[in-house]
Length: 242
Image (cartoon, rainbow, N blue to C red; front, top):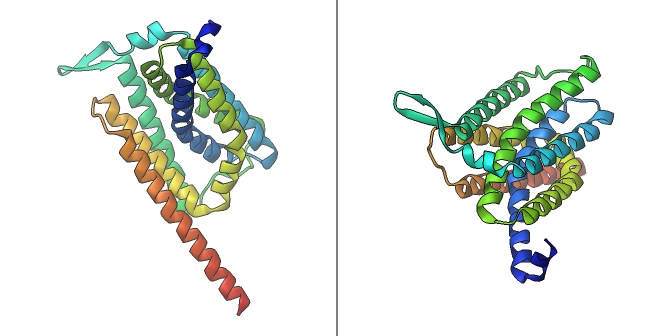
């Protein structure tokens, strides 16, 4: 088992896969950050860490069932000569869930009817955890399929996933605080989730959209919004000095 670490290529594979796992996990962090923002401040960090640990367990668990993952690509349902595999159905369900959830969040944000904190905290906490579990399953599937396609060694896959999850746990609070501090960033994050939901949905119908284009569009939008925030802060300082 440990002889693989004597090979320099192992570290290149580990670094590449860890980076990709972090990139794929950004969607998860955004989703978890928006959901946990509905909880009282003292509950938010606990919910974030719980959500990310669940994602880690899902990904490692799925890696242990590589043969089952491989079987998900075979058709199990045919409708009007159009075949769906287990993976397709999971992607479609996850995509619809994200589309509905993001649309409702955007509607609440625009209408100013966001859910308050008057609901039973314990019930609300576990309601949010259940939603995190649902989307974790979809994102974990995508993550594991990427890992299996890039690396042949199970040990490297597990180490890469654990490292990436540790990195995400470290930065999750900062990302969450930043999203909730800037309302326009939160709206942009919800738009990203809407786009990802649509991407998952069309992928379930065998329409391949290069993810590089999607992530580039998200990054470009984020950079533009950061410039807008800087400009607004500068205008505010100018107004304050008058």
